[in-house]
Image (cartoon, rainbow, N blue to C red; front, side):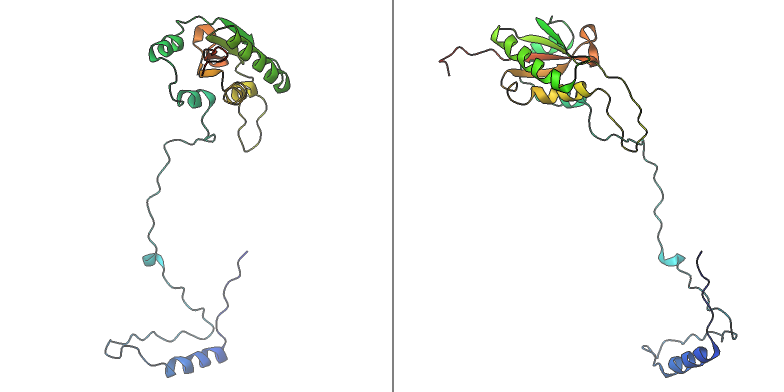
Length: 200
C-alpha cells in the first residue's frame, strides 16, 4: 500500500519561503503569478498532468492469434513451383494417382525417418514420379501451458525431412494431398527423374 506524502513541517516551510524569496525571475516583464500561502500542516497540491498526456484511442486487434508460425500446409503452398504447372494442378486436384504409398501413421520419429528415406530413394530408383506419404493428422493432447503445442508431430516433421539430404535431391515438389488421398493427413511427393549414370 502506497504511503501518503507527509506535509511540510513549519521549519521546512520557512526554509522554502527563504529559498523562494531569493529566486530571481527569468522573465521579469511577464506577470508574476502568486499562489496563496498554504496553511500550516497542509499537503502540497498535486500538479495536474492531464494536459501533458496524450492518450491514443485504443484499437482492438482484429483477432488474437497465439500460434504465429505457419502450419505445414501454408509452408508447402508458399514454396515455389518446380514442376509443370499442368501436372501440379492435376496433382493437387487429385487427378493423378499415386504410384506407391507409405503409411507412417503410428510410428515414432526414430522409426519413421529411416523408413521414409528408404521409401523415397527406392521409389526414385524404380522410376516412380508421384508417391503418397501418409502422416496422419495427429491427436490433440493436453495443452495446459502458455505456449500452444502443434498437433501431429509427423505431420510437422516430414516436410522438413523431405527438404533435407539425402531426400532433397530426389524430391521435386511436396504438396498436401487431395481429400480422396488423405487430405491434411497425407502428402503428395513428386520425385525427380533419376539421371542415368554418366550423364551430366
